[in-house]
Image (cartoon, rainbow, N blue to C red; front, side):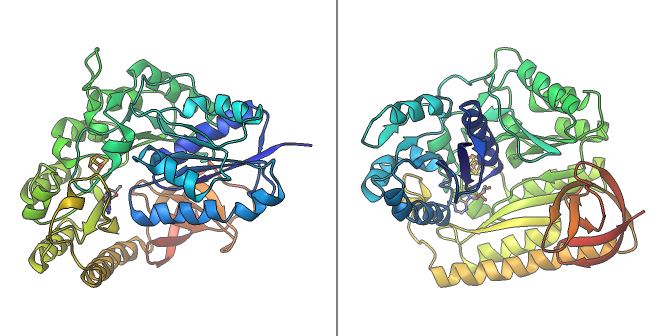
Length: 438
Ligand code: 5AD
Ligand code: SF4
């Protein structure tokens, strides 16, 4: 009988791609992908960026207690960012003693060994966490799940220490992959038929700072975009303090690179930006947006915005609303500030009460949605090219994104995943567009 595995992922694209690496390791061990119900190995790839991500993981791990009792051979592994938090592996052991293996982000490559050790008869929970990041491991063999898109890591870790953020503590210092490894991975993926490549890093703009060979992110991007083949090249995430003209010129030079930038602003108040240690002012952010639109008048921006950071007043929040209006983001991820143990902001006074945070996030979401809807309406009657990426069974429609990341839906009687589709937009609802193939 086939042995099955499932990986349950929380959090960002970095984690989605790391789950593909976990899947690759399990497939090399002879397991095949399955659902949670019939899996013999369940791996949780956790996230700790906000408290609710942690609560989801706790809830879902806890829910396996009964099943593990009935089926002691079921193997439960817990890894990811949460496990790199101080004291968390011990908390898992205390709360969920039925878990088999706990591993971290810095020793994912050891997962096979850990599983085999556990299977060799170790009775107790096996915990193995590396406190510090090691050398970058090359030669991984991810089992990719997001065709026609492929994720490609370019750098790991973060040195920025924004005061609200736990990432630098759980992901370690910045490390860049060597350009030759990135280029050969992308070349291989394009040859295999992937149509969209997304370069990943916590802060892609600091790519190369730690390398012996000198290479900046714009130089790397230029080289990747020069690889032959028909593909879209995306990248995330850019830090506004490092976002510069050299990068915009590379974007302008290559048709393969969409004129869409994810540029998290976090707040529109200079006082809050300074308390967040973002190292730019709202004026500097707006100047960079202006520079981008000077070279690329049709460029769109998306963002991450936090409300309710410690000490945020009504005036600070109003400054965020003003900035959102001024930039006119195509869309934005909006978050309520979540206190993370060990970060500087967790120690700050004037934590904002929950009711105020809620009120602010509702107003912000309303504004962002209104801007998104207005942009959707501008699509009506126009033609766009989308890259078909999935089928929505509920809607009975295929879907894909245009270069600005807009989701377009259409009907087809054959599998179109991986095809470039020219759509005439006939309808829209919120962020979604509906159209007919032309
Ligand atoms: N609370 C709320 N949002 C956070 N982010 C990071 N840390 C926190 C936190 N403690 C958001 C930021 C970041 C995105 C990935 O998550 O907006 O850009
Ligand atoms: Fe967190 Fe700031 Fe680093 Fe982004 S740049 S991962 S928000 S510390």
